[in-house]
Image (cartoon, rainbow, N blue to C red; front, side, top):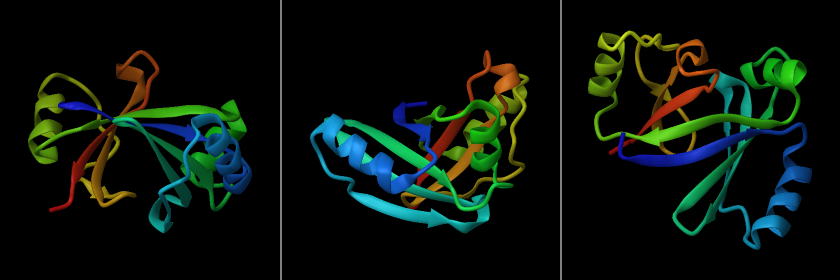
Length: 133
């Protein structure tokens, strides 16, 4: 894992939260995108070399919808940038981690993604991200 790619924050209302984060970070959202397979709308912010991803549920039964119902708004995951997501998934399986995806899937911001189950990472949902080339 090369670096933290972004921090994902679950929000109830994407437009309201975008306004809040624009004021907080002093910068505009640079991209909004829907990921229908995950039932989520996203908004991305850059601050220096760091990125924040806001995640809002498209439907209540989506993973983000369920997260918001159980835990409310807040940090949802930490994403790490990887060069080869298939190799990193293989390495993590060999280390005994449980992956939530059998294969990488298409995520937001032109990435292939895979999630690591939080039961094996002290309660933190970890996302692996590889730029689609």
